[in-house]
Amino acid sequence: MLTYFDNIEINLDLIESLSDFKKEFNINCLSILLVDNRKIYNVEEIYTVNNCQASLFLQNNTIVYLACDSLKPVYHLVEDDDIVAPLNKNFVEEVCIPINVEKHKDIIVCVYFGFSNKTKGIPELLSSFFSKLDLFKIYSYAFLKYNELSNTEKIAKLLILFEDTIKINQSSMRLHAFNVAFWTIEIAKKLNFPKDELEKLYYAALFHDIGKIRIKSSIINKESPLTEEEYEEVKRHVEYGYIITKELFDDIYPDIPLWVKYHHEMYDGSGYPNGLKGNDIPLPSRIIKVADVIDVLYSPRSYKQNVSVDKIIAELKRCSGKDFDPEVVDAALEVINERIILPMDMLKSSSEKILPANLSLQTYKDIFNFDGYFYSNEEQSYFKSTNAIKDIKDLWNLLSASLVVEILNSIYEYEVDVVPIDENTYLVSNIRSLESKSYVSILWELEAILITQDGKNINVKVKKLSADDLLFVCDNTYTFNMATLYKMRLQFEDGEVLILNGRITYSYPASADCVYYKYTFTNIIETTRDKLFRQIFRKQIELRRQFERILK
Image 1 (cartoon, helix red, strand yellow):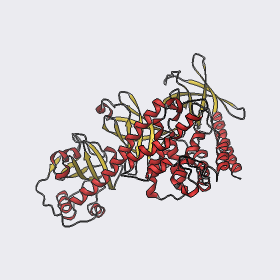
Image 2: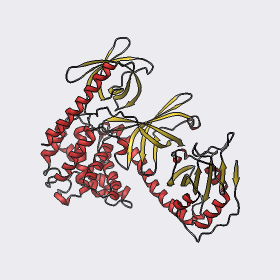
Image 3: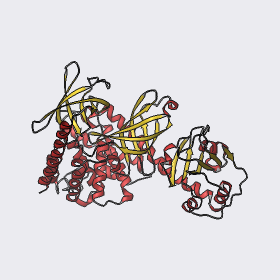
Image 4: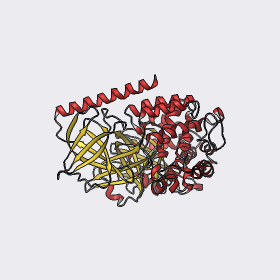
């Protein structure tokens, strides 16, 4: 049942906090929404029950669409045969009040109330709302928050374009920007970097190598040593990066171009482009430099294999005070301990995130997989596909959705709630990690053999292992059937060999030539599972002791 309200007297003289208003009328969810071109931004959520923001999509059969279309307050009583879908399935009553101004006719702000139980006095609620709350202030506040969200989205789109160019032309640098941003923020937190500065530091790290798009791919991807002329050309990427980021950020974050320019300066003054020394180098540049080196050593490239953690730590300590700020090195060692050796929830590691990702959607008809990027801030999270999402209506009624994000040479799995926004974008919410607490991180590279039903042996590398599944990587010349059982022969460093049975439950591209595969165990006997646990615990203790020895 829908009811429209006309001619309600609006009094803009009185203002009261929305939180007090929520309490006064026992509102379960009170949100300020901004609608722009059929896309809804949840700019403020005063209070929520059961994740009310999960269904924010401007469908024609929602109260938000009806309020925006009529520009009148709308009340919705949820009924069994109702053609109008509530924003949250747990709500039985909803109210949506639209606000717009002449200057921005295409942008409508809505104040949304959701009720878990039937309430009385909706006319009184509306009358009180218009008499106590300043609509123009609500609109102005929403518009300001929307601009902040829009800037984040624009930066995300630009970075996605940059990263896709890297994938095609400089595949050896794939994921480098994301990895460096991760290490940068984690190190900065250890150094008590101002919280309000973390966002621009994050963007500086993401774009620290953007100048390399002006360097020939043949030089960037070269496997043999660079000539002196080629090295001089590579060094120019910091100047190019300064110019590009100045165009991008100068009016928003004017510090970023200089941070990018100086991220190859050395602590002893022997770096480039200006030979700055010690504290004359901006602290953000000193942090990015250490983060950059960690990823160069840690991540495999076309011209080298990744370096073990003990050698990374030894290199950082050796160059402390020469190449690197000693305080930054000390902070980096703490991060390596916490973020490599110990398991982690990657999406909780920082407040700002833009990560390569895959979204898998299971409907009643089929399973759909989309490659793209996950990006979020404190207010909202999105998945943006690099290819158009076709038949959005068919993807609305989902059985389940899972998000796989890629960072630090590995992938992390999450169950999520998603809602389609446009042909390329999903709103992501209620993110739940699927990582087992018993897994060991990517430092564990085990040799294994996948045995096909026709007896073919395929050499693979196991990256992560738990008592329920494992993650392995192999080249992309093989095609596996997800309905088929495969045996796997897994060999540990101490010589123990385990034979496992399982199915491949999904795949994800690791590079142009390699693919990650999730291998889920089936019919594992308890003695085998016990051996898995023992190996996992042994490895965790070994890594911990190794780290402690190196730090002494």
